[in-house]
Image (tube, rainbow, N blue to C red; front, side, top):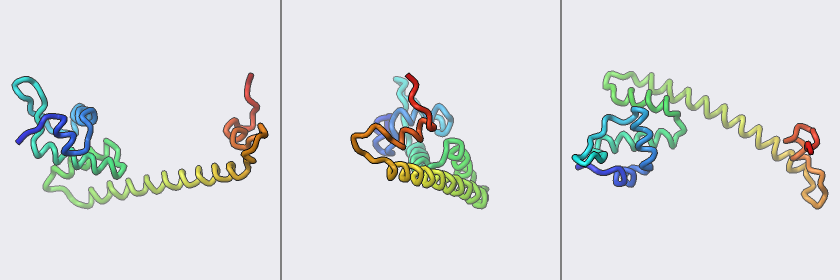
Length: 136
């Protein structure tokens, strides 16, 4: 059984545009074409698209996904490699979360300092401007 790109998109939750993008990056195996030149996706390719979508949902980069796909396809792989890649990703997520929490604290503090009334004084804008008045 094979599907066209629209059917593959519906079956996997990946947009046709992203399917073409993943194909151009080499993340998908070579896709068969119909006599008319239309892409035809088999079950193996759909499974790969679902893998990619799930990896993207977990925040893996395209480079990391390429590595994961390579490991997935290698029956001689060591799970330690997969684990190490996932652990690096967790550490990256932890770092990004910490930065976002710091941004949230800073912004929350600025919001608390802002009177939010009819006055033009605004510590939020002042902070964003680095304490500089707007240039005219």
